[in-house]
Length: 116
Image 1: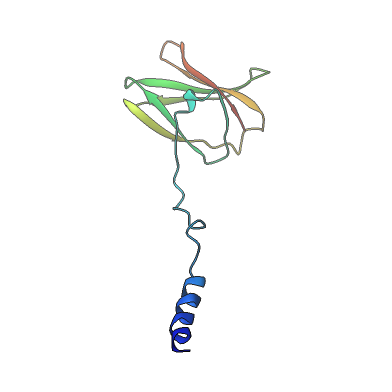
Image 2: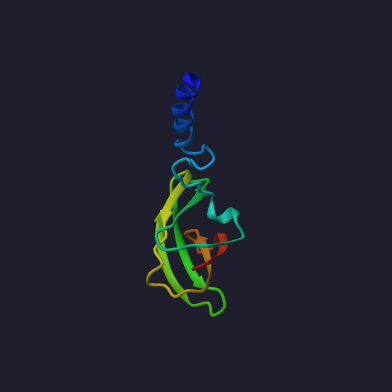
């Protein structure tokens, strides 16, 4: 009987602890260069990474895929390596778009498809 008195609280204590399988690490953003992916879906406020081999001024363009309507042409000063940008999509209609980067001459450097 004495053994039961000592082991019962121990069993109850173990029964009340959370399962280790249910414990998840805090969410962290695993960010990949958006141009390494052929096509992706983005939402308002998503962060994307763009890798550049040289520091320069580029133009970021968002063009509707089927009608070729351009929704934005933004100048961007890059740094060498990873550049993190936040995508804001509230003013853009849902659909499929071409996201391109052009150099100062207007030549396309990188291009990918995104869905909003």
